[in-house]
Length: 445
Image 1 (spheres, rainbow, N blue to C red):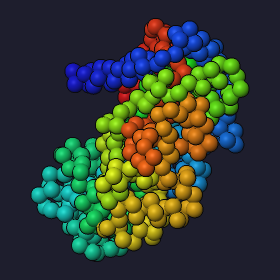
Image 2 (tube, helix red, strand yellow):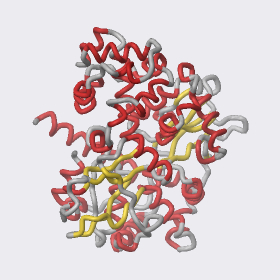
Image 3 (cartoon, one colour):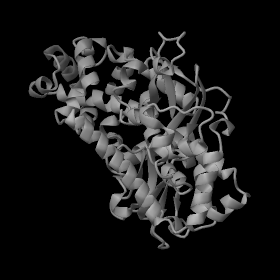
Protein backbone atom coordinates (compact mmCIF):
# COMPACT_ATOMS: atom_id res chain seq x y z
CA UNK A 1 0.00 0.00 0.00
CA UNK A 2 2.84 2.35 0.84
CA UNK A 3 4.35 1.80 -2.61
CA UNK A 4 1.01 2.59 -4.32
CA UNK A 5 0.64 5.77 -2.29
CA UNK A 6 4.19 6.83 -3.13
CA UNK A 7 3.47 6.24 -6.83
CA UNK A 8 0.37 8.44 -6.64
CA UNK A 9 2.29 11.18 -4.88
CA UNK A 10 5.04 11.07 -7.51
CA UNK A 11 2.45 11.31 -10.30
CA UNK A 12 0.76 14.32 -8.70
CA UNK A 13 4.13 15.96 -8.12
CA UNK A 14 4.95 15.39 -11.78
CA UNK A 15 1.72 17.10 -12.85
CA UNK A 16 2.38 20.01 -10.50
CA UNK A 17 6.05 20.43 -11.46
CA UNK A 18 5.24 20.54 -15.18
CA UNK A 19 2.52 23.14 -14.76
CA UNK A 20 4.56 25.24 -12.33
CA UNK A 21 7.39 25.26 -14.86
CA UNK A 22 5.00 26.36 -17.61
CA UNK A 23 3.58 29.21 -15.54
CA UNK A 24 7.01 30.41 -14.40
CA UNK A 25 8.31 30.67 -17.96
CA UNK A 26 5.44 32.68 -19.43
CA UNK A 27 6.17 36.35 -20.04
CA UNK A 28 2.53 37.35 -20.45
CA UNK A 29 0.84 39.99 -18.29
CA UNK A 30 -0.89 38.31 -15.32
CA UNK A 31 -4.09 40.16 -16.17
CA UNK A 32 -4.17 38.51 -19.61
CA UNK A 33 -3.60 35.05 -18.16
CA UNK A 34 -6.33 35.58 -15.55
CA UNK A 35 -8.74 36.83 -18.18
CA UNK A 36 -8.16 33.84 -20.47
CA UNK A 37 -8.52 31.34 -17.62
CA UNK A 38 -11.71 33.01 -16.42
CA UNK A 39 -13.17 32.96 -19.92
CA UNK A 40 -12.55 29.25 -20.44
CA UNK A 41 -14.07 28.57 -17.01
CA UNK A 42 -17.35 30.13 -18.25
CA UNK A 43 -17.56 28.13 -21.48
CA UNK A 44 -19.54 24.91 -21.17
CA UNK A 45 -18.31 21.68 -22.73
CA UNK A 46 -21.66 21.33 -24.54
CA UNK A 47 -20.68 24.27 -26.77
CA UNK A 48 -17.60 22.47 -28.10
CA UNK A 49 -17.98 21.13 -31.68
CA UNK A 50 -19.02 17.51 -32.06
CA UNK A 51 -16.71 14.85 -33.45
CA UNK A 52 -16.77 14.50 -37.27
CA UNK A 53 -19.99 12.78 -38.27
CA UNK A 54 -21.62 13.70 -34.96
CA UNK A 55 -21.20 10.25 -33.44
CA UNK A 56 -18.32 8.95 -31.35
CA UNK A 57 -16.74 5.81 -32.83
CA UNK A 58 -16.72 3.08 -30.19
CA UNK A 59 -15.12 -0.37 -30.23
CA UNK A 60 -16.57 -3.48 -28.58
CA UNK A 61 -14.27 -5.19 -26.10
CA UNK A 62 -14.77 -8.46 -28.02
CA UNK A 63 -13.20 -6.98 -31.20
CA UNK A 64 -9.91 -8.66 -32.25
CA UNK A 65 -6.91 -6.35 -32.01
CA UNK A 66 -6.24 -6.56 -35.74
CA UNK A 67 -9.78 -5.42 -36.55
CA UNK A 68 -9.49 -2.59 -34.01
CA UNK A 69 -6.34 -1.33 -35.73
CA UNK A 70 -8.22 -1.26 -39.02
CA UNK A 71 -11.08 0.70 -37.43
CA UNK A 72 -8.70 3.32 -36.04
CA UNK A 73 -6.79 3.55 -39.31
CA UNK A 74 -9.82 3.73 -41.63
CA UNK A 75 -11.55 6.25 -39.35
CA UNK A 76 -8.35 8.31 -39.20
CA UNK A 77 -8.49 8.51 -35.41
CA UNK A 78 -5.87 7.90 -32.75
CA UNK A 79 -8.13 6.36 -30.11
CA UNK A 80 -11.64 5.13 -29.33
CA UNK A 81 -13.62 4.23 -26.21
CA UNK A 82 -14.06 0.50 -25.54
CA UNK A 83 -17.54 -0.83 -24.68
CA UNK A 84 -18.31 -3.77 -22.43
CA UNK A 85 -20.65 -5.94 -24.59
CA UNK A 86 -22.34 -7.28 -21.43
CA UNK A 87 -23.55 -3.88 -20.23
CA UNK A 88 -25.98 -2.79 -22.94
CA UNK A 89 -28.79 -1.94 -20.54
CA UNK A 90 -26.78 -0.24 -17.80
CA UNK A 91 -27.07 3.46 -17.05
CA UNK A 92 -23.68 3.47 -15.29
CA UNK A 93 -20.86 4.60 -17.56
CA UNK A 94 -18.37 2.86 -15.26
CA UNK A 95 -19.88 -0.48 -16.29
CA UNK A 96 -20.39 0.45 -19.94
CA UNK A 97 -16.88 1.68 -20.72
CA UNK A 98 -13.73 -0.32 -20.00
CA UNK A 99 -11.32 2.41 -21.07
CA UNK A 100 -9.74 3.95 -24.16
CA UNK A 101 -7.93 1.98 -26.86
CA UNK A 102 -5.20 3.93 -28.62
CA UNK A 103 -2.04 3.22 -30.53
CA UNK A 104 0.03 3.38 -27.35
CA UNK A 105 -1.81 0.32 -25.99
CA UNK A 106 -1.28 -1.49 -29.28
CA UNK A 107 2.42 -0.64 -29.26
CA UNK A 108 2.76 -2.08 -25.76
CA UNK A 109 0.94 -5.25 -26.81
CA UNK A 110 3.13 -5.72 -29.89
CA UNK A 111 6.34 -5.16 -27.94
CA UNK A 112 5.18 -7.47 -25.16
CA UNK A 113 4.69 -10.30 -27.64
CA UNK A 114 8.04 -9.58 -29.25
CA UNK A 115 9.65 -9.72 -25.82
CA UNK A 116 7.98 -13.05 -25.14
CA UNK A 117 9.39 -14.33 -28.38
CA UNK A 118 12.85 -13.11 -27.47
CA UNK A 119 12.51 -14.75 -24.06
CA UNK A 120 11.53 -18.03 -25.64
CA UNK A 121 14.70 -18.14 -27.73
CA UNK A 122 16.52 -19.71 -24.81
CA UNK A 123 15.28 -22.17 -22.22
CA UNK A 124 16.70 -20.04 -19.40
CA UNK A 125 14.93 -16.92 -20.55
CA UNK A 126 11.72 -18.83 -21.16
CA UNK A 127 11.73 -20.19 -17.64
CA UNK A 128 12.44 -16.74 -16.22
CA UNK A 129 9.51 -15.32 -18.17
CA UNK A 130 7.13 -18.00 -17.00
CA UNK A 131 6.64 -19.34 -20.54
CA UNK A 132 6.03 -23.07 -20.86
CA UNK A 133 8.52 -25.38 -22.54
CA UNK A 134 6.04 -25.95 -25.34
CA UNK A 135 5.73 -22.22 -25.87
CA UNK A 136 9.50 -21.83 -25.94
CA UNK A 137 9.74 -24.59 -28.50
CA UNK A 138 7.07 -23.07 -30.69
CA UNK A 139 8.46 -19.55 -30.65
CA UNK A 140 11.97 -20.91 -30.93
CA UNK A 141 10.96 -22.79 -34.05
CA UNK A 142 9.46 -19.63 -35.45
CA UNK A 143 12.66 -17.74 -34.75
CA UNK A 144 14.65 -20.41 -36.57
CA UNK A 145 12.51 -20.12 -39.66
CA UNK A 146 9.46 -22.36 -39.18
CA UNK A 147 6.16 -20.66 -39.97
CA UNK A 148 2.48 -21.45 -40.07
CA UNK A 149 0.07 -22.91 -37.50
CA UNK A 150 2.44 -25.69 -36.44
CA UNK A 151 5.04 -23.13 -35.41
CA UNK A 152 2.81 -21.77 -32.67
CA UNK A 153 0.82 -24.89 -31.85
CA UNK A 154 2.73 -25.35 -28.61
CA UNK A 155 2.05 -21.82 -27.35
CA UNK A 156 -0.49 -22.31 -24.58
CA UNK A 157 -3.08 -19.56 -24.30
CA UNK A 158 -2.73 -19.64 -20.54
CA UNK A 159 0.97 -18.84 -20.75
CA UNK A 160 0.35 -15.94 -23.08
CA UNK A 161 -2.50 -14.65 -20.96
CA UNK A 162 -0.40 -14.72 -17.83
CA UNK A 163 2.45 -12.89 -19.47
CA UNK A 164 0.23 -10.28 -21.10
CA UNK A 165 -1.91 -9.65 -18.01
CA UNK A 166 0.97 -9.49 -15.58
CA UNK A 167 3.64 -8.01 -17.77
CA UNK A 168 6.03 -10.62 -16.38
CA UNK A 169 8.50 -10.39 -19.21
CA UNK A 170 8.96 -6.67 -18.72
CA UNK A 171 9.08 -7.10 -14.97
CA UNK A 172 11.89 -9.60 -15.42
CA UNK A 173 14.04 -6.93 -16.97
CA UNK A 174 13.65 -8.06 -20.57
CA UNK A 175 11.99 -4.96 -21.91
CA UNK A 176 14.76 -4.30 -24.43
CA UNK A 177 14.55 -7.69 -26.15
CA UNK A 178 11.80 -6.75 -28.61
CA UNK A 179 14.19 -5.50 -31.33
CA UNK A 180 16.22 -8.70 -30.92
CA UNK A 181 13.10 -10.80 -31.34
CA UNK A 182 12.00 -8.88 -34.40
CA UNK A 183 15.46 -9.19 -35.89
CA UNK A 184 15.35 -12.99 -35.52
CA UNK A 185 11.69 -13.50 -36.30
CA UNK A 186 11.50 -11.09 -39.20
CA UNK A 187 8.19 -10.38 -40.93
CA UNK A 188 6.79 -13.72 -39.77
CA UNK A 189 6.32 -12.33 -36.26
CA UNK A 190 3.72 -9.83 -37.43
CA UNK A 191 1.95 -12.45 -39.52
CA UNK A 192 1.73 -14.69 -36.48
CA UNK A 193 0.29 -12.10 -34.06
CA UNK A 194 -2.47 -11.24 -36.54
CA UNK A 195 -3.17 -14.57 -38.20
CA UNK A 196 -2.19 -17.35 -35.78
CA UNK A 197 -3.62 -18.48 -32.47
CA UNK A 198 -3.68 -17.51 -29.67
CA UNK A 199 -2.53 -14.05 -30.81
CA UNK A 200 -5.16 -13.85 -33.56
CA UNK A 201 -7.96 -14.11 -30.99
CA UNK A 202 -6.56 -11.49 -28.64
CA UNK A 203 -9.34 -8.98 -28.09
CA UNK A 204 -9.39 -5.30 -27.30
CA UNK A 205 -10.88 -6.01 -23.88
CA UNK A 206 -7.93 -8.15 -22.88
CA UNK A 207 -5.36 -5.44 -23.52
CA UNK A 208 -7.13 -2.14 -22.85
CA UNK A 209 -6.66 -2.28 -19.09
CA UNK A 210 -3.19 -3.81 -19.06
CA UNK A 211 -1.66 -1.55 -21.69
CA UNK A 212 -3.04 1.92 -21.23
CA UNK A 213 -1.08 5.08 -20.56
CA UNK A 214 -3.90 7.22 -19.25
CA UNK A 215 -7.12 6.70 -17.26
CA UNK A 216 -10.72 7.13 -18.41
CA UNK A 217 -11.85 10.46 -16.92
CA UNK A 218 -15.18 11.75 -18.34
CA UNK A 219 -16.74 15.18 -17.86
CA UNK A 220 -20.38 16.29 -18.12
CA UNK A 221 -21.81 18.54 -20.86
CA UNK A 222 -22.23 21.35 -18.31
CA UNK A 223 -18.58 21.10 -17.19
CA UNK A 224 -16.30 23.98 -18.10
CA UNK A 225 -13.82 23.96 -20.94
CA UNK A 226 -11.20 24.98 -18.38
CA UNK A 227 -11.58 21.56 -16.74
CA UNK A 228 -11.11 19.85 -20.11
CA UNK A 229 -8.05 21.95 -20.98
CA UNK A 230 -6.48 21.19 -17.60
CA UNK A 231 -7.03 17.47 -18.10
CA UNK A 232 -5.49 17.67 -21.58
CA UNK A 233 -2.49 19.70 -20.44
CA UNK A 234 -1.49 19.56 -16.80
CA UNK A 235 -2.92 16.09 -16.21
CA UNK A 236 -1.54 14.68 -19.47
CA UNK A 237 -4.70 13.10 -20.87
CA UNK A 238 -4.92 12.88 -24.65
CA UNK A 239 -8.69 12.74 -24.76
CA UNK A 240 -11.66 13.52 -22.53
CA UNK A 241 -14.99 11.68 -22.94
CA UNK A 242 -18.19 13.69 -22.45
CA UNK A 243 -20.98 11.74 -20.72
CA UNK A 244 -24.33 13.05 -19.54
CA UNK A 245 -25.53 11.99 -16.08
CA UNK A 246 -28.11 9.21 -16.37
CA UNK A 247 -27.23 8.59 -20.02
CA UNK A 248 -24.18 6.35 -20.40
CA UNK A 249 -23.83 6.90 -24.16
CA UNK A 250 -20.95 9.19 -25.00
CA UNK A 251 -22.01 12.66 -26.13
CA UNK A 252 -18.62 13.80 -27.38
CA UNK A 253 -14.95 12.86 -27.35
CA UNK A 254 -12.63 15.86 -26.99
CA UNK A 255 -9.01 15.33 -27.99
CA UNK A 256 -5.95 17.54 -27.73
CA UNK A 257 -6.01 17.94 -31.52
CA UNK A 258 -9.64 19.05 -31.46
CA UNK A 259 -8.85 21.76 -28.89
CA UNK A 260 -5.95 23.05 -31.01
CA UNK A 261 -8.22 23.17 -34.06
CA UNK A 262 -10.81 24.99 -31.95
CA UNK A 263 -8.21 27.55 -30.92
CA UNK A 264 -7.23 28.07 -34.55
CA UNK A 265 -10.84 28.90 -35.38
CA UNK A 266 -10.66 31.73 -32.84
CA UNK A 267 -8.37 33.69 -35.16
CA UNK A 268 -9.72 37.21 -35.51
CA UNK A 269 -10.88 37.50 -31.93
CA UNK A 270 -8.95 40.07 -29.91
CA UNK A 271 -7.92 37.75 -27.06
CA UNK A 272 -6.59 35.10 -29.44
CA UNK A 273 -4.81 37.52 -31.74
CA UNK A 274 -3.16 39.16 -28.73
CA UNK A 275 -1.61 35.98 -27.37
CA UNK A 276 -0.96 34.29 -30.72
CA UNK A 277 1.10 37.24 -31.95
CA UNK A 278 3.70 36.60 -29.26
CA UNK A 279 6.88 34.74 -30.25
CA UNK A 280 7.03 31.27 -28.72
CA UNK A 281 9.88 32.40 -26.47
CA UNK A 282 7.47 34.75 -24.68
CA UNK A 283 5.46 31.70 -23.69
CA UNK A 284 8.61 29.91 -22.53
CA UNK A 285 8.44 27.51 -25.48
CA UNK A 286 9.88 25.05 -26.11
CA UNK A 287 9.45 23.67 -22.59
CA UNK A 288 11.66 20.71 -23.48
CA UNK A 289 15.32 21.54 -24.15
CA UNK A 290 17.58 19.90 -26.71
CA UNK A 291 19.13 17.51 -24.20
CA UNK A 292 15.65 16.35 -23.12
CA UNK A 293 14.33 15.58 -26.62
CA UNK A 294 14.27 11.84 -27.26
CA UNK A 295 15.49 11.13 -30.80
CA UNK A 296 16.06 8.09 -32.98
CA UNK A 297 18.83 7.87 -35.55
CA UNK A 298 17.96 6.93 -39.10
CA UNK A 299 20.09 3.77 -38.98
CA UNK A 300 18.40 2.30 -35.89
CA UNK A 301 15.84 -0.51 -36.18
CA UNK A 302 12.24 0.66 -36.45
CA UNK A 303 11.17 -1.47 -33.49
CA UNK A 304 13.79 0.27 -31.37
CA UNK A 305 12.01 3.54 -32.17
CA UNK A 306 8.69 2.16 -30.98
CA UNK A 307 10.39 0.75 -27.88
CA UNK A 308 11.68 4.24 -27.05
CA UNK A 309 8.17 5.62 -27.33
CA UNK A 310 6.95 2.92 -24.97
CA UNK A 311 9.73 3.48 -22.44
CA UNK A 312 9.35 7.28 -22.42
CA UNK A 313 5.55 7.29 -22.85
CA UNK A 314 5.68 9.69 -25.78
CA UNK A 315 3.77 9.68 -29.04
CA UNK A 316 6.49 10.48 -31.55
CA UNK A 317 10.19 10.86 -32.23
CA UNK A 318 12.31 12.99 -34.55
CA UNK A 319 14.46 10.97 -36.92
CA UNK A 320 17.95 12.47 -37.07
CA UNK A 321 21.08 11.97 -39.09
CA UNK A 322 23.62 10.21 -36.92
CA UNK A 323 26.50 12.37 -38.11
CA UNK A 324 25.02 15.88 -38.35
CA UNK A 325 22.13 15.52 -35.84
CA UNK A 326 19.93 17.27 -38.42
CA UNK A 327 16.28 16.22 -38.48
CA UNK A 328 15.31 13.98 -41.39
CA UNK A 329 11.78 12.94 -40.52
CA UNK A 330 9.34 11.94 -37.83
CA UNK A 331 8.03 8.65 -36.47
CA UNK A 332 4.60 8.66 -34.82
CA UNK A 333 3.17 6.00 -32.56
CA UNK A 334 0.28 5.54 -34.99
CA UNK A 335 2.76 4.42 -37.68
CA UNK A 336 2.71 0.97 -36.05
CA UNK A 337 -0.45 0.41 -38.10
CA UNK A 338 1.69 -0.02 -41.21
CA UNK A 339 3.56 -2.90 -39.58
CA UNK A 340 0.32 -4.57 -38.51
CA UNK A 341 -1.87 -3.95 -41.54
CA UNK A 342 0.68 -4.14 -44.34
CA UNK A 343 3.54 -6.44 -43.28
CA UNK A 344 4.09 -7.31 -46.94
CA UNK A 345 5.69 -3.88 -47.37
CA UNK A 346 8.51 -4.87 -45.07
CA UNK A 347 9.81 -8.18 -46.38
CA UNK A 348 13.34 -7.25 -45.25
CA UNK A 349 12.29 -6.79 -41.64
CA UNK A 350 15.49 -8.34 -40.29
CA UNK A 351 17.34 -5.29 -41.58
CA UNK A 352 14.57 -2.69 -41.56
CA UNK A 353 15.94 0.63 -40.35
CA UNK A 354 13.99 3.73 -39.42
CA UNK A 355 15.13 5.37 -42.66
CA UNK A 356 13.90 2.44 -44.77
CA UNK A 357 10.61 2.40 -42.87
CA UNK A 358 9.77 6.08 -43.36
CA UNK A 359 10.82 5.89 -47.02
CA UNK A 360 8.50 2.93 -47.62
CA UNK A 361 5.60 4.53 -45.73
CA UNK A 362 6.05 7.79 -47.61
CA UNK A 363 5.92 6.02 -50.97
CA UNK A 364 2.92 3.90 -49.95
CA UNK A 365 0.80 6.76 -48.62
CA UNK A 366 1.90 9.42 -51.12
CA UNK A 367 1.43 11.85 -48.25
CA UNK A 368 4.88 12.73 -46.97
CA UNK A 369 3.77 15.84 -45.05
CA UNK A 370 1.37 13.99 -42.84
CA UNK A 371 3.29 10.77 -42.34
CA UNK A 372 7.01 11.28 -42.03
CA UNK A 373 8.29 14.65 -43.22
CA UNK A 374 9.81 16.77 -40.45
CA UNK A 375 7.55 19.65 -39.42
CA UNK A 376 9.68 22.33 -37.83
CA UNK A 377 9.85 25.94 -36.75
CA UNK A 378 12.52 28.36 -35.57
CA UNK A 379 12.85 30.11 -32.22
CA UNK A 380 11.39 33.34 -33.63
CA UNK A 381 8.12 31.66 -34.71
CA UNK A 382 4.89 33.05 -33.25
CA UNK A 383 2.47 30.99 -31.20
CA UNK A 384 -0.16 31.60 -33.90
CA UNK A 385 2.03 30.10 -36.64
CA UNK A 386 2.69 27.03 -34.48
CA UNK A 387 -1.04 26.56 -33.88
CA UNK A 388 -1.72 26.95 -37.62
CA UNK A 389 0.85 24.26 -38.43
CA UNK A 390 -0.38 21.82 -35.78
CA UNK A 391 -4.02 22.28 -36.80
CA UNK A 392 -3.64 22.33 -40.60
CA UNK A 393 -1.23 19.39 -40.73
CA UNK A 394 -3.11 17.39 -38.05
CA UNK A 395 0.13 16.60 -36.24
CA UNK A 396 0.82 16.30 -32.53
CA UNK A 397 4.21 17.99 -32.26
CA UNK A 398 6.45 20.48 -34.01
CA UNK A 399 10.21 20.44 -33.67
CA UNK A 400 12.16 23.61 -32.98
CA UNK A 401 15.38 23.62 -35.01
CA UNK A 402 18.53 25.73 -34.92
CA UNK A 403 18.67 28.96 -36.90
CA UNK A 404 21.73 28.17 -39.00
CA UNK A 405 21.22 28.35 -42.75
CA UNK A 406 22.36 24.78 -43.38
CA UNK A 407 21.53 23.38 -39.96
CA UNK A 408 18.36 21.68 -38.84
CA UNK A 409 19.51 20.34 -35.50
CA UNK A 410 16.64 19.71 -33.09
CA UNK A 411 16.85 22.06 -30.11
CA UNK A 412 13.37 21.51 -28.71
CA UNK A 413 9.88 20.14 -29.28
CA UNK A 414 6.44 21.71 -28.83
CA UNK A 415 3.52 19.35 -28.21
CA UNK A 416 -0.24 19.84 -28.20
CA UNK A 417 -0.11 19.65 -24.42
CA UNK A 418 2.39 22.51 -24.32
CA UNK A 419 0.28 24.78 -26.52
CA UNK A 420 -2.90 24.20 -24.51
CA UNK A 421 -0.96 24.98 -21.33
CA UNK A 422 -0.05 28.41 -22.70
CA UNK A 423 -3.68 29.58 -22.57
CA UNK A 424 -4.60 28.72 -18.99
CA UNK A 425 -3.47 28.40 -15.41
CA UNK A 426 -5.12 26.45 -12.61
CA UNK A 427 -7.00 28.59 -10.09
CA UNK A 428 -6.30 27.87 -6.44
CA UNK A 429 -7.92 24.57 -5.36
CA UNK A 430 -9.79 24.41 -8.68
CA UNK A 431 -9.20 20.72 -9.14
CA UNK A 432 -10.27 19.76 -5.61
CA UNK A 433 -13.36 21.94 -5.73
CA UNK A 434 -14.39 21.15 -9.29
CA UNK A 435 -13.46 17.51 -9.78
CA UNK A 436 -13.47 16.17 -6.24
CA UNK A 437 -12.20 12.90 -4.86
CA UNK A 438 -13.64 10.67 -7.60
CA UNK A 439 -11.62 12.27 -10.38
CA UNK A 440 -8.48 12.10 -8.24
CA UNK A 441 -9.01 8.38 -7.91
CA UNK A 442 -9.48 8.01 -11.66
CA UNK A 443 -6.33 9.99 -12.44
CA UNK A 444 -4.39 7.82 -10.01
CA UNK A 445 -5.35 4.62 -11.84
